Image (tube, rainbow, N blue to C red; front, side, top):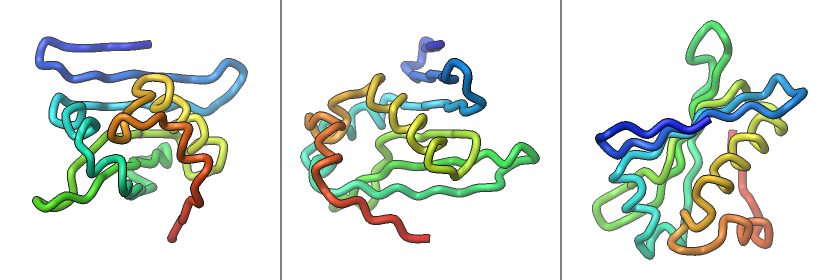
Length: 118
């Protein structure tokens, strides 16, 4: 499902068939612009906060570094911190914004190492 209001916010909701995993993707006009700058092709930070509500939802911010500080690329709200939950969340981002990392295809991340810190 996709929802876009007159202010330019892009909000997408996804739930896989036969799965309990769900994801909400939020991209504001500022985030859409940040996706096009060169810095977003160089370094991406993922910061997740869990247990935000009684349903154990996780909020994941995708940020890039710039001279002005961290700039947001997207916000993902999903149903937990399992591998499947993150896979569903990043799949929604990939489907909605395939060139969100400075014009690079999101799938190029698969060729680089992914560092996760807890």
